[in-house]
Length: 334
Image: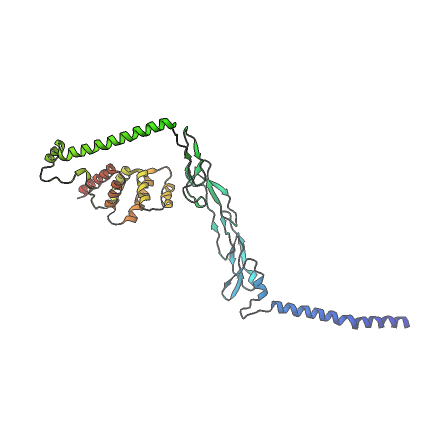
């Protein structure tokens, strides 16, 4: 009996000493948890919850919601806590490269445009857009990172390559330089020929102005004053709408001339390239679209501006042909 009483006494002492400490630890832990999760403002959002947003947060109504990560899109906003918004992975062929609150992902760039001569450098992933580069043997005249059209590299002849074709520059061929003595003789001969040609040109001009040829031309022109040389006078273009005459004008100009006019009119290379990409293999439609783009930028008097640009670029024959088209069609309409 005495032994049992001693055991009970020992257990009672242990209970008194340790159980209160356990109770205090549990109550202390609960209090600290309540403090951590206590809202810091009237909108019900806690400081602890805001700080757990790995990719940052955004405000929706009176709440701060966690952003979706890169490669994801938002399905619906948070309603109770910052992290209970719902996100979903971007679908195949789309991406989001930064933390976001967008409900859709961006479409991946395609490197397979017909006749663009591009290939995939880095494939598109859910978190990064695709990157394109020129195919082997091609180069881009603009920024290689945003290139939409690559051109074939030039092939050099016997002179060889001075600088190889790369992503943004065409091939530079070496110049064939003759032997020093031969080159010197050729240089002297060329100089003499230029001098003789210059003297001959002066003599012809004097004969035309003062001699027999000049008098004959004066008679043909009807006499009465010297008058300006007809060949030196600028062409006179009718101020008419170009729209009804576009097919004939496109056939006369062709793509190289129209592209030169567009470049001289400060039309961006990207716009010119898009005209080619929109009609692969159809030069007439490419020229038509670029001419319409140029007309829209010129506005009133486009017909006269077109004639002046052709004449100033040494395309007088084409300018005269365009004038003939405009005049013929205008007279037919009247």
